[in-house]
Image 1 (tube, rainbow, N blue to C red):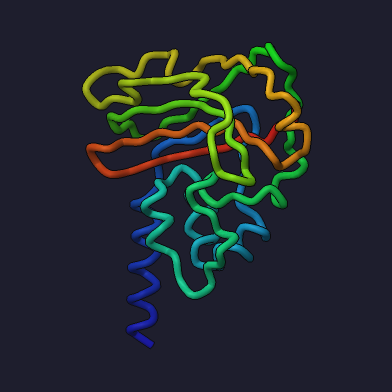
Image 2 (cartoon, rainbow, N blue to C red):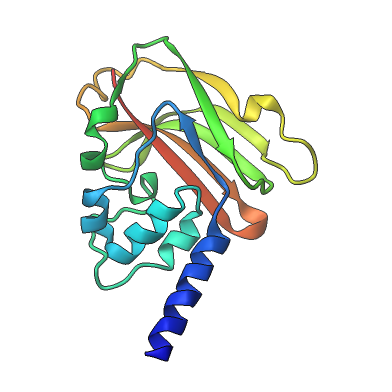
Amino acid sequence: MFTKIAALLTALSAIGMAQAHGVIASPPRRQPGSAFQSACGLQMYQVVSSDQYGNQQGAEQNINSETTAACTLYLCRGMQFADNSGNVQHYTAGQSVPISIDIRAPHTGVANVSIVDTTTNSVIAGPLYNILDAYSTSHTIPANQTSFSITIPSLGGACSTAGKCVIQWWWDARPIDQTYMSCVDFTQ
């Protein structure tokens, strides 16, 4: 009994220390839900839903026997379209889309925003916004790194079906080996 309590307290302590980092604040990003839990397992669901700002490498530490092939962590951090079908945005070619990023703990790195085809997990447009000195710890974070706009390119019908495409914000803090990402579902 004591061992189980100690293990639980250690796990809860680790979750508390992991809080922070960054996500898309708007437009609405993909969130974890029951489809994420089914694909990635209860343990990963609990960790990710308690800290959506966490890094990719932290999520990977929770891969276990419950994790299925549908848990594509390097696509929207594993967030599933089925949990987010009510948040699909519609954008037209040439439309300017304001993006807001919430950074809770800066780490020097690079960041970009691209359009990703979710069936192939490949960039089909972009980067639409690129930050070479992203969220640096050596100076104040410029406003244009947390509030900016992207222009939606013509995608030739590639994103006409909901769930097929996402706007993906990707931040790689290589000096500390941590990667962050958020996705916004949209159609065109």
